[in-house]
Amino acid sequence: MNLKLEVIVIPVSDVDRAKAFYEKLGFRLDIDYAADDKFRVLQFTPSGSGASIIFGRGITSKKPGSADGLTLVVEDVETARKDLIGRGIAVSDVFHYAGGPFNNSTQNPRVIGRDPEGRSYFSFASFEDLDGNSWLLQEITTRLPGREWKSTRVQTEDVATLAELLHETEQHHGQYEKTHAAHNWWDWYASYLNARQNGSNPQDAEAAADRYMDEVHHVAPL
Image 1 (cartoon, rainbow, N blue to C red):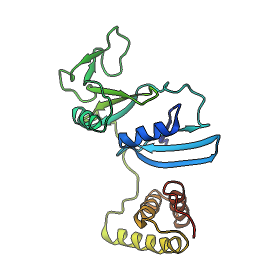
Image 2 (image 1 turned 180 degrees about the horizontal axis):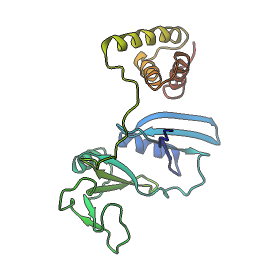
Image 3 (image 1 turned 180 degrees about the vertical axis):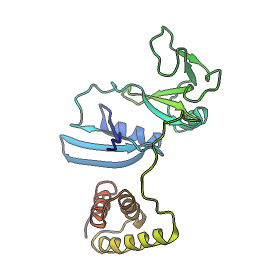
Image 4 (image 1 turned 135 degrees about the vertical axis):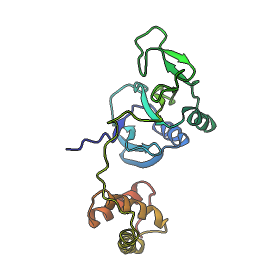
């Protein structure tokens, strides 16, 4: 049985302020949905990540800022640090842990500078969101044996299969296009294709794409 960690809930005090921060960070906004004035949920996904964060109103009773050590894996910590600084994010100097990765048990656990041996997993930088939820950038250049799952996703790279799927997507999008206001067709296509490639049948994929356009891009029916 596959168990995929896909969502981490983080507590924030001001939803719109947090939304602006994570947009500036470069995370992809997947959902911004409010049922009423008591419940609102936002989902953001870091670039290339299989896991997302969720925050909002009526989501968690945890104290804002109490999430600690949320970790983003990067191939080059210095390049990632410069990118975030360029986006206006305050990021620490690159550091390594005196006692090894994530070891905060010593008196002064963080030592300024990259891991002196240049080891994968050992070099970090850190930043916080506006509530104080803390994030780490961890540089991983080579993974240890057994640290990656083999993909079981059906591959659709061959041209004939992809062409057939695109044709199917166009057919299902046609009905949506007739009944909704002007929109970017590629947004609907992307959601539909993603659902189909992850195992949904055409009807469920169509529903997922419709829901995505309604909740994220706010496309209204005619």
